[in-house]
Length: 189
Image (spheres, rainbow, N blue to C red):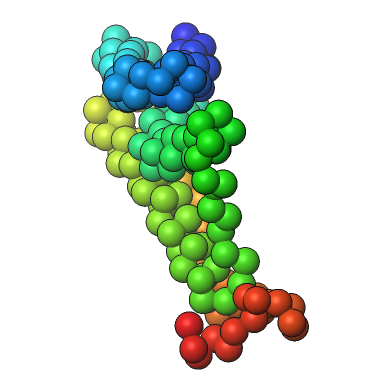
């Protein structure tokens, strides 16, 4: 049941996103579109409550409960960024908005961009870690929590990978090809 609900939440996220952006730009109803987009966190709330009830009713904590915590964490950490990404593209395509801004490719600007990306992923994994720890405490010593601990290890790995990627762009910045407008010395940025 939990996996089905996670799938429903994911599909619901994209349906609400498409509906909200359609109302905002195609129907020229920005307030109605915003109202639809603001309904998206309700999906995660339902998933959280159902997962908590499932555990309270004596379900053995397993990978599905961990996946629910990870899904909620990633929705919190990356959901707003995804909505902004889709909004910029939808506005450009259907409402004559400016083209979406592309991330920088070179130098310090790229490193800063990668640290921002790492911060979003770290927030997502951090929220998932907190929810997983809450589930561990909620279940207590009565149940097997190894699957929840396994998810926590995975979230720590996600944080580590993102920090290594961001650090690599800081320590080894990609230089612009010779003769391009983006070619600037690193010290002058």
